[in-house]
Amino acid sequence: MLDQFLKTVKGGLLEELTGKTEVDKGKLDGVAEVVTDTFKSGLMDKASSGHLNDIMGLLGKGGSSSPLAGSLMNSTVSNLVSKLGLPKGIADKIGAIAIPFIIDKFNGFTSEKGKSNEDGVKDILGDLLKGSAKDKLLGGLGKKLGF
Image (cartoon, rainbow, N blue to C red; front, side, top):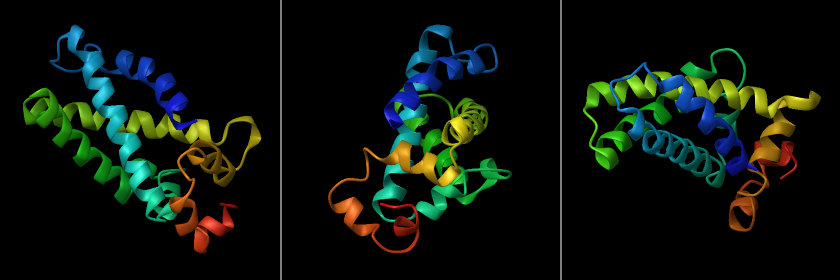
């Protein structure tokens, strides 16, 4: 479900970035790909290590200024520079636009159709939380969320 969410967000992200950065329109698809892959990797790392409270920190007010959001922004900037060769200043600008945009959409997606944030996170990360990652989550927040 996370992949579906990111596919949906990618189109809106392209629109959000168009004209707000110095990146050629033809290269924005690659930028959106790096940004969404980085977001996914960041969530997967936190989920697989049992740090769902960090993911929950993205939800609600202040989510874009949470420690995980900062980490996602730093990773995004680093990946844009290393993978696409963008100048750091442009990558910083993209990160400052893209990560809050995705977090905002993530908030809406996890709480859609009257679901609680916890149920929404469980749904969106369900495919990722199988096998050993699921076993790691049997205590604490993972158990609270029903993993």
